[in-house]
Every structure is written in C-alpha cells, then in structure tokens.
Length: 141
Image (cartoon, rainbow, N blue to C red):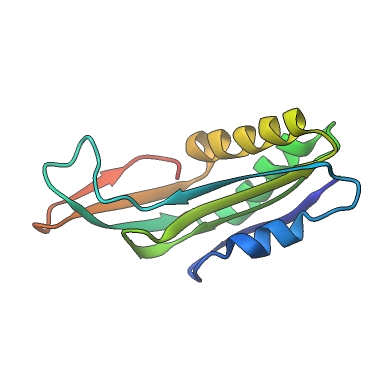
C-alpha cells in the first residue's frame, strides 16, 4: 500500500482526516495512535500547561521516510502528522492512522511509526509548567 499522508504543521490535527486517508476496501483493520498534551510529567515539579514543539527544516522529509520504512514490505497504508508551535493541555500533538488487510500488521506498523518518531524525528519540545518553569525535552515527539 502506501504513505497517504505525512505532514508537519501548526494547524490542529484531525483524527477523522487521518482515518479517511487510509480508508481502503482491501483493509480489514485500521489502527490509530493519538498523542495529546497532558497536564503532568514525571520530571515536572508542578502542573504542565503547554508544550512548545519546534522542528528541524528536514523534519517533514524525515517523517515521510519513517512512514515509508514502516510500510515497506507490508500491505499497510499510513497517515501521520505532527504539530509544531505552542499546544495547550488536551491538544493533539501527533496522529497516526494505519490500515491493512489484517490487524496484526496494522498494529505493528502503527507502533513502528510512533516509536521511530520518538527516536528519529528531529523535533524538540519545551515543556511549560504553571509557575512559568520550562524544560527542553530531547529529540523526538
């Protein structure tokens, strides 16, 4: 199948758009992963109020390559997006949708995409706490 969508941008993410992008009559399974900004972090001393994401100029090409590697040799299709900019608690930071003929493959590809984003995507985030304290988090989403 294919990479149907691989995008980095500052617009709010739409889960339905991603599910629609991988919709296929040959697919018996669709899986998804939605990463949201949460109000806490084990490393934070207080409540988290926002995350500020920034990306390397090559990040979009890297995201597409991550998706291509994940679907290579499979019958799966993938749609994946990651936001940049300031995101409030509850905002969607990343969405991955995968369809394939069988569920195991859909789960495997979805997990491969999100785990590789966490390690290989040149994306950084600054965590903002309620008291104004900030902390940079490393490579990945």
